[in-house]
Length: 405
Image: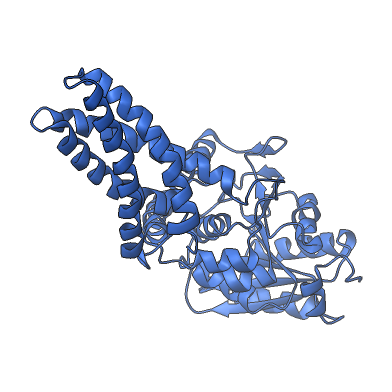
């Protein structure tokens, strides 16, 4: 076995007798399918996988003869080991086995081996080389070949569309039982993953994506197991609860993703003459700005009916300024949590003062030239003044308000 292709930090921590790959097979009451699965996997890896490997049977609270079958396999095959957990939960079993493994790359596959084993090396090769941080088999990628019923196809695609809509997930298949992760990444990422059941995969992938980790997707050949014991209804309910919990956690900034991004995340490629992250910030700032301007104009038109132009402008700008600062804090500059929130709002009010000076000054000049201008003319002047104020506001937020955020 050569360690030359492994990332430097991973190669240094491996002994010559340490497996490069540890494939975990999580099982619960699988006394019938366990032995043929493990033997088939072992035969394939022995013949086709070019590195040292281990197969770990992660038995989570089986009540049948699964533990006995696992012990027999451990005795017969030197590359096979087993662990027994007293509590049930696929996520719990994976987290325990991965956390205690010494292999450079950690993978798992379901005991039914629905995924063609020819995808093993394409799955883990980008992790062994250090090119990617996680890898997933995808039944929904172009090039995949899948045999399953219409019901499961509909549920799978519907679930992934739900993830895109609620958590802005960009990976294509959250629940395919064929995934891998680098051990150094797992050591930092897994402590943040709370779910112990079927939502474990989704939570891990969403957090990895939000932290800027690179996820490699492999099209797979996959044949549905007609004897699958997954309770679709209870799993769907648990997934919905997981999505709601994860959405709250991401929204409140409770998860320390910034630290993980700093340690492991991949920053955007530098472009000559363009500060890092500037393009994305401009796009997000523009979106917030459009929404703020529409809200401002609506408020101004509403308040103008009962107030003078200056007071209507002041109140409309003040109300939208508070919302604008909060939106830019979270969306444009990716600041999470409540740390320095009041300071940012105070600085935002200074930025608001600059905008007020520009818009009020433009109104004063207009009224000096025309004491009774039409409402549409006032709005046109304010739109122009707001456009100038928007550019000034972005620069002040980027280089002053959120500079150290």
